[in-house]
Image 1 (cartoon, rainbow, N blue to C red):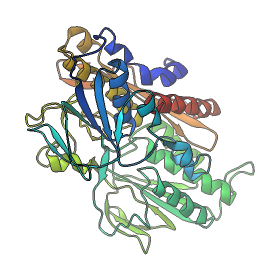
Image 2 (image 1 turned 180 degrees about the vertical axis):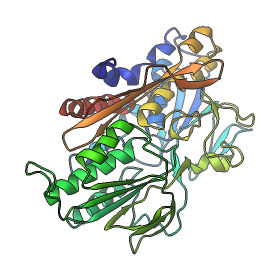
Image 3 (image 1 turned 60 degrees about the vertical axis):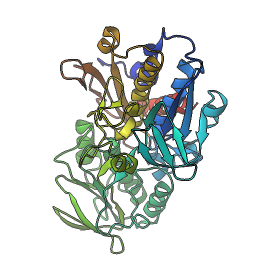
Amino acid sequence: MPLKRRTIMLSLPAAVAGLSLGLPRGLAASPHHVVVVGGGFAGSTVAKYLRMWSNGGIAVTLIEPREQHVSCIMSNLVLNGQLSVEDLSFGYEALTGKYGVNVVRDRARSIDGANQRLQLMNSGSLAYDSLVVATGISFDPVDGLDTRKTPHAWIAGPQTSLLRQQIRDMPDDGTFVMTIPQAPYRCPPGPYERACLVADILGRRSGILGDGGRSGTGAPRVVVLDANPGIQAERETFSRAFQGLYGDIVEYIPDATVVAVDSDAREVTTTRGTYRGDVLNVIPRHSAHGLLTTSGLTGAGGRWASVDPVTYGSILQDFPGVYVIGDAQGTGQPKSGHMANSQAKICADAILRSAAGLSPYTEERLNNLTTNSACFSPITRSEASWLTAVFRYDRAAGAMTLAPGSLGEAHRWNSENYRDMFDWSRNLFADTFG
């Protein structure tokens, strides 16, 4: 195949590490203080690499209310029991013990850009020289949606466990109804991957899938209501899965925007009609976290934070020294954990250069600025597909654009991809939290 799957998938998280080679060892006597908000893939990576690449010369404080981060990556495997939430939970011991990051368990309330201070919910305020916001996503409200009964499970944790139990309690010939929000949303292939895994669970349980073949009667149903006009990632792969492997189970309906939900009746009303299921999995439309919108970093009426992709610094003049990485940024790059890890390293490099009195806009850096997005998608309980893309800085457009020939998709799902998926995820987890 033209793309070396194993090489690309297993080495991409560290692909931009060379950007910071050659920086001064140690900085000014009074250390530059970076405050990072959010301890997911973006926030933990930037905190780690700021300390590591500066040889301890940068002071880093990470604001995170939770003791552990639960990875959305691989979390669909919780639904079929192959992984647990505990398997995907990562603490911050390495950040504090190995790298000297100061982790404060609190929530950020607001950002005072003019005075370069971050107001916390319980611990007063913090002054910063640079502030990195890596808070992820918020969800639009949906009329009638009660997530205690109708989980989205798009932030991994208790909702993932609840959705797993609801699927386990379904009748063998029951109906699972899920919705996919308007793009952009977190993890483009993720909803289609979930539809496949739920179809696999129900198909095997009902006897429709397996060595005996399909019975053609008493089939469970997985209804996929997509607000988009078509499949948003791995279109060929998921089209074949929906129409072939799961053709007796999956019903895919595009252009179906959610209007309202009745969580008690387990009904969802869309622009394509009303659908009832034994289990509803409604994933609302995404936007940047409320900290960004209330602080003004998304601009008037904006859904995402506009940033300069050379540094991930905010383009708004009222927020000097503020950077936004991960799912909340609005550069047009995919919103994924792998991409967040990649952006974090570019942001860390830019902050280090600025703190050392160097420009992040050198010819060499602009000509070699790339990010990567890669993922594996389990299609069955033992086979997976994969997707990879490289984004390169386009100096004429001032934007990150898809590098020619870099978009790759598995030609078929298989067990080798499934094994590689665990290697890829372990590598990414270690690079971020280890």
